Length: 384
Image 1: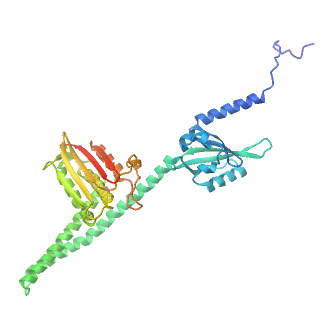
Image 2: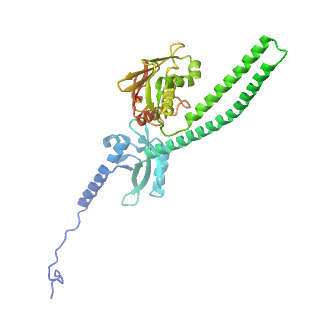
Image 3: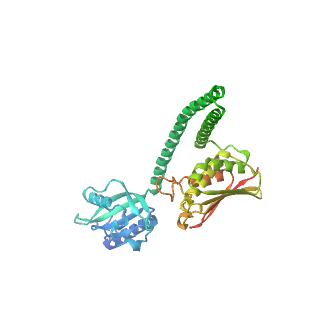
């Protein structure tokens, strides 16, 4: 009679010890801790009351808090939208897991972080809800890119409308110019007018023609400024371009009663670059300087523009005695859409675009600033 321990292959059966529940629990805990340590996502576990029990290394990176700083606190303390999170947690208890949803969290530095979050209901052996597991993937960058695309599209639409308006303005200006020319001819041939009246009418008609021509030049410059073209490098006098730029902004400068000093150590400073793109840079820098000095008392607001030759480069300096740039803002001023101006006064595009243009044209772009004393931007461009 064969023994119960024998096998068909002639080998004896070996008895196996039953699995140790405590050992399996330790292994499961080790696996979970490994996941939490190496995951790039924000993963957390909270009890039924919302008190945090665990927190991943990815969560430390995303929110800026260490695990020790968050465990034991309520999950609501770290979200920028507690009602939305409460609604999600209630939904997880009814129909787990919840669909993915974007939720705003609050970083330790107090800025908003966006995450794509999914909650999974946790239950004990009796089937009762014991807590919730949250898996969150950061989407802040994607959200910022979406917002930037919306703003860029909006700016493009504004540019298109501006071009259309300029064309509409040019049509009546052409009519006014034609009528002023005709009126000038009529006045010159008119009989029965004394010399004084005739002279006054001729002067008036001449001024109408001059101002009409000035308006048409402005609209042409706006159109030229709005249209983007690839860099076209030519040799030109940087001093002349700066003087034209300040003429372009002359109305705003006079209206704000700002003193502008322009000096150059060279009568002519020839560079080989793109005039339109550099004009855009100078318009942005001088406009920023105008906004910076507006708080100064009448007659005290000053902007200095200076050019000089520094080796094989032309150095252009735009300096103001305005409010200056705060230390915490200096690393952000070249970030797209970041602006310290009040709503409606700035887009946050000027300085990032200025720096990109100068780099594209082979130049250098630096700045220095002191709060309450002013800001100086320095541009260095290759000479012809």
